Image 1 (cartoon, rainbow, N blue to C red):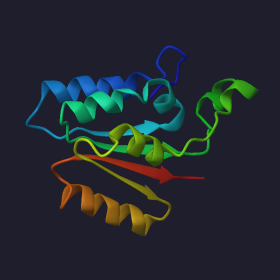
Image 2 (tube, rainbow, N blue to C red):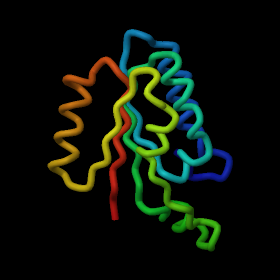
Image 3 (cartoon, helix red, strand yellow):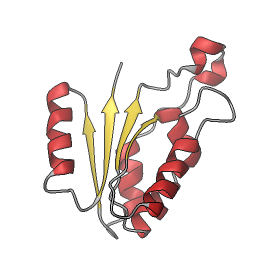
Amino acid sequence: GGGTGSGIGWSVGATLGYAQSVPKKRVISCIGDGSFQVTAQDVSTMIRCEQKNIIFLINNGGYTIEVEIHDGPYNVIKNWNYTGLVDAIHNGEGNCWTMKVRTEEELTEAIATATGEKKDCLCFIEVIVH
């Protein structure tokens, strides 16, 4: 999410709110690493509300679209262990599954798991891209 300074971070909260309004649907989101860092704590509420979203966290090591618009050192963010963070938020309480993927094969496998055996829980898939 984002493209403008005021838009960065909206996607996590938007996922939370939309999923809460459509309990019979499963919301799928692709969220950039920079955007996620602004509102990561919303994942806690998603788990508490028993949402079954599938979140693809796009981890490109902090290189964002903002660099294309106006380059500067403020565009380089600190890389996080995103699956580790969500595991910590989950803390063994609630229904949440995480996976970190680096290849197309791993991504295919993660999607199969998220839509198969883990279809009844929140699935957080960190996609490492260059």
